[in-house]
Image 1 (cartoon, helix red, strand yellow):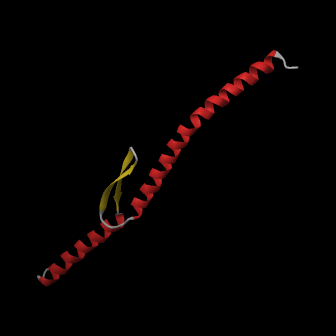
Image 2 (cartoon, rainbow, N blue to C red):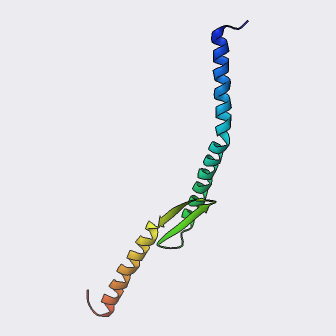
Image 3 (cartoon, helix red, strand yellow):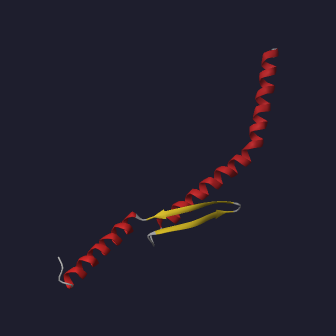
Amino acid sequence: MQTLETALVIAVVLALLAFMLQLAPSLYRTAWLAARLEVLATLASLDNAGLYQANQIRLETDGATALKVSPQRVLELSALLRDTVTLFRSWLGGS
């Protein structure tokens, strides 16, 4: 035989369970979209083709802008500029 407290607790737990099951599909969808956008952003960041690059990442109606800057390319460009200036100075007879 159930007591009054047990009957109330069972009813509240069942109501909360039904409410949480109702929210589960939308929460799953939101988590899936966030994970997919993260994967697309990671794939876009692995592309090291230029000094900087801005990409639009879109997944259905959601989207984000991914800005990628390559510090290695900046260092290479500055070294190239420094070496070119040094070469021209040596050709022109300067020090």
